[in-house]
Length: 80
Image (cartoon, rainbow, N blue to C red; front, side):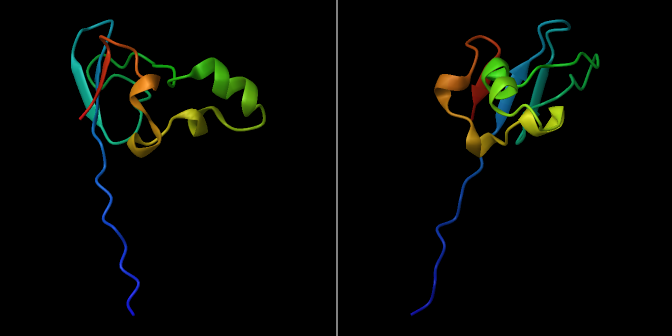
């Protein structure tokens, strides 16, 4: 019998920049605005920074499959 994997559908993260108000889209949490280059913090920053003290800063940014609706900041993020 063949091992058939269920195809995963990646969610698109849509984020509005709170500085320039432009829309950014990615399958990974965005580290900087693509328009004005403003730096962003990862979602649930304070939880991640205390739980993963020895890891690099860039490892705190999650892929869209790791993010749930409860993690999003209403008005700035959308999972599509």
